[in-house]
Amino acid sequence: MTKPRDERPKDGSSQPELGDLSERLKDLSGRIAAERSEQAERAKPPASLQDASGYARGYRLVAEFVAGTLVGGLIGYGIDWLFGTLPFGLIIFLLLGFGAGILNLARAAKRVPPAQERLGSNPPPKAAFDDEEED
Image (cartoon, rainbow, N blue to C red; front, side, top):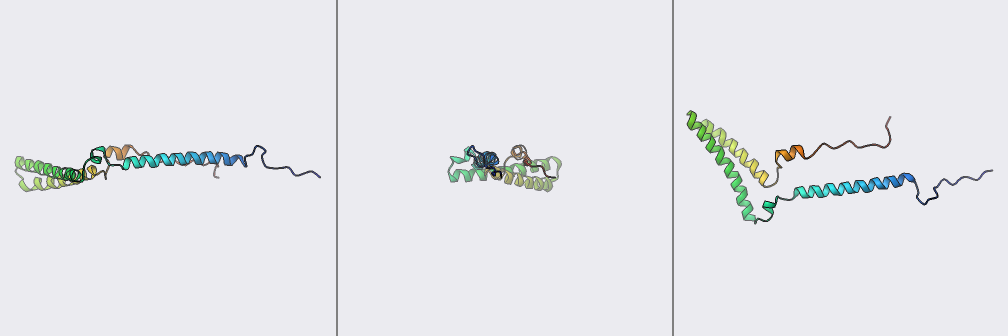
């Protein structure tokens, strides 16, 4: 009768697949940590608002809102004065200025990133690679 062979590797590692798995796990942990730190960096308020006191931030946000509304109203009044359609241009551009003021307010409070940042900085996620082929 023959002796059964010892199936375990003699070099001390339990299985070769687990070594590869642990390397992949370390790589994944590193990528997750890098992504978390990047997201934390993006969540910080801009440098112009970090050093300001609460009152200064509030006044800046109010100024952003009032400026947008005021500019919209002035443009509407100017168009009405040129074409003689007094209430319509004023109302339309006052509402557009109000919307622009809200958008500027949200951007200044770092709630909505600029359009360039929203569209270009986040590429779509890549598909996960599978080691084994599925049939």
